[in-house]
Picture 1 (cartoon, one colour):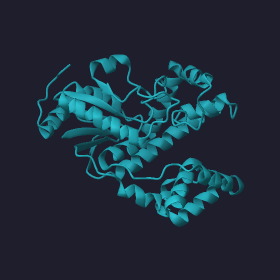
Picture 2 (cartoon, one colour):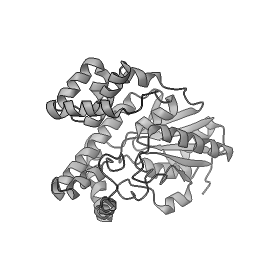
Picture 3 (cartoon, rainbow, N blue to C red):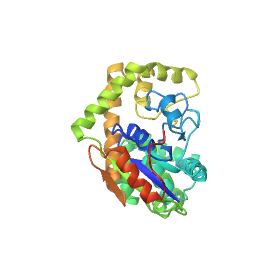
Picture 4 (cartoon, rainbow, N blue to C red):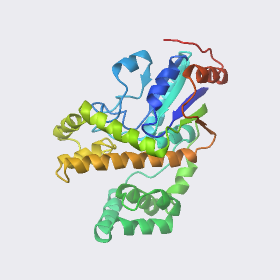
Length: 312
């Protein structure tokens, strides 16, 4: 069983290229994006429009309400089910996105981590209120230096979870994550789009966020905010762009600062994605610009043992 992964940082052009590629293959697209799963979050996630989704079948888009946390574990189950169905139709799954944890969960399985323990979490939060998250980060460095190296000293949520796992199990989170569950039986051709160089990527990020604002992103976030059942504790609201505009609506800072924070957060996301991709085994970087879709489609078809040609 074979599937193709098209990875890359945000704003690198993955979506458009995947659509062009799928036109030359008997393929269906499986979204690997932790924000595209949510309904009513269209503009800020750069969700493919209905026209594009009508041309090439898409999966794992609009499968959860924003009030519903969507996990890597659920993604793995949903993605494998979608891939099996695509294969049953004699087509090939084209996995497209930038949520690297989801790609890892799909390929390597997931660690068997303990469920959240409210008493432990409250104790860690109480310590953080007194000492601050940077001090808690230093505690994490002592027990799990690898986790501390990839978690920012201000990222309270992830610091809390890593310390919680340590307290509950006596094992570093990193070690448990490496253990994982049974890996997937699928073979993956992993391709990555580096996009443009860093200054150009930063400009693309700024231009895309400006376009999102012009398309009505503020109104989209206002509608979500007005629901009353959502908050920054949810993964949907923590999505880049939404979280920063949410803070503005909550009166934490002004609109100009919200936009600055959103662009900065998107740049940091792209940097983290690139760091992750550089450590991904058996990954092939596509040149910039990438090959003509028909050319790459022919190569994929030969690898997968299927027929290529313009299919739509």
